[in-house]
Amino acid sequence: MNALFLALVTLPAALMAFVLEGRRKNVASPKDLPYTWGFYIGMSGLLLGVYALFAAFYMWISGTENGSISAVVLLVFAAVWGPAGYFAIKRRRWAWIVSTIVSFNPVWWIANSVYGHNRWDEFDRDVR
Image 1 (tube, helix red, strand yellow):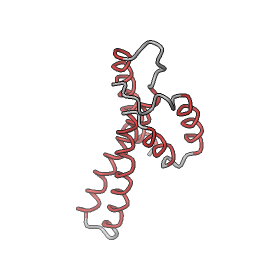
Image 2: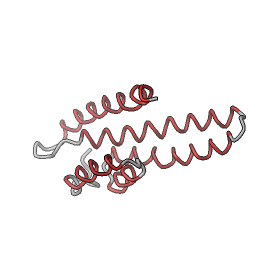
Image 3: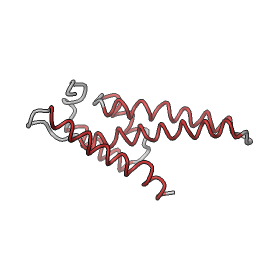
Image 4: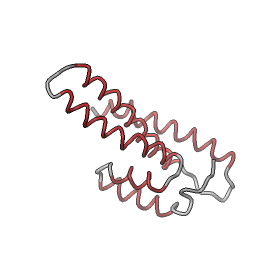
């Protein structure tokens, strides 16, 4: 399962984070701090939301016992992670907070709290 997560979420999110940061550097002032970690958080959330949407559709059409319940749970998961990931890429404060909380990972909470605190004034500023 870890290899699947690495291949489907971590590596594509990291690659896209570096691409988005490279594009951001072209339009941002030189004094702006890099946002690579923020792009990674956003892309991983967006990818998790999309994959949860596909999994919910599969559960729904498979017709297995409790497939409908699983599909609803996955749809809720997709409805939280997907938009939060998209808007974290767009540097919205609320999305950063939601992405951090729903990770249910204390290490992630600490890392994102420190990172978010350092960039709090940059959030919601139109930089793209």
